[in-house]
Amino acid sequence: EVQLVESGGGLVQPGGSLRLSCAVSGFTFSTYSMKWVRQAPGEGLEWISYISGDTDTKTYADSVKGRFTISRDNAKRSLYLQMSSLRAEDTAVYYCARGGFGSYSMDVWGKGTTVTVSS
Amino acid sequence: QSALTQPRSVSGSPGQSVTISCTATSSDVGGSDFVSWYQHHPGKAPQLMIYDVSQRPSGVPDRFSGSKSGYTASLTISGLQAEDEADYYCCSYAGGYVFGTGTKVTVL
Image 1 (tube, rainbow over the protein chains, first blue to last red):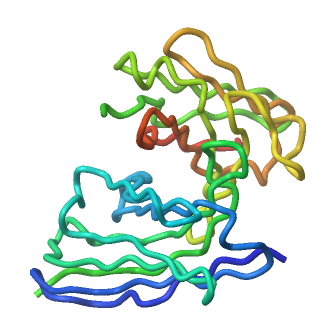
Image 2 (cartoon, rainbow over the protein chains, first blue to last red):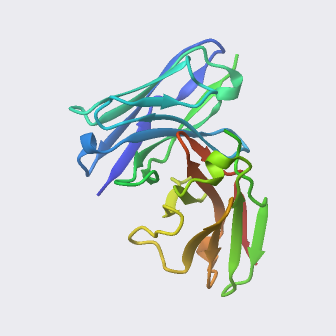
Image 3 (spheres, chains in turn orange, red):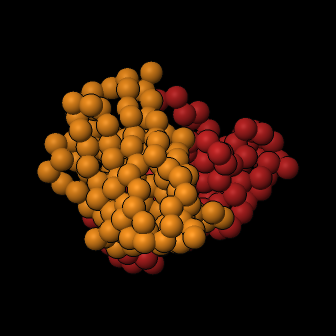
């Protein structure tokens, strides 16, 4: 069974840092691109970052560019999101999602991890 | 990139059909054929329902269908069922991903 499990969320002060992880199982991780998507309280989904299977390509939404870094360890079957200079508006549930094979969709999602930025 | 505009809510009785629109305001997003749709029950993982405008992943019921005309993509749910009550988001890829504003589907 294909599974994505996020972890690492929590309460952090404004300006602080946090590292999210996404552990995957049930598929050949290195052959799929991965994304991070978030949902702020009462808001819709927002794509924030993409990484190709070979890690050669990484892209970011303007809202997090320069503050967040996406990475992956294919040997450990894990995806990461390093978040720094956190702001109140980064408060959200963060989801990792697998890129659809041969398409630009997100075909499998985790259940999310909650990040709260507050003093 | 600008957002994709969806109606805030749509509703229908069991067995009826509902259609959710997703309108782009820019040519890059509007010209993309990489439109996908996601169903999201609050507190759960979102689920892919349609990709590449009209393709249905394995396991998604065939009462879910997608289409696109000009700058507007649409998701139609035929034969509405109670379990279809959820939030639905369109998403377009044009160099980056842009999600729609989201639509709450209510089954009366």
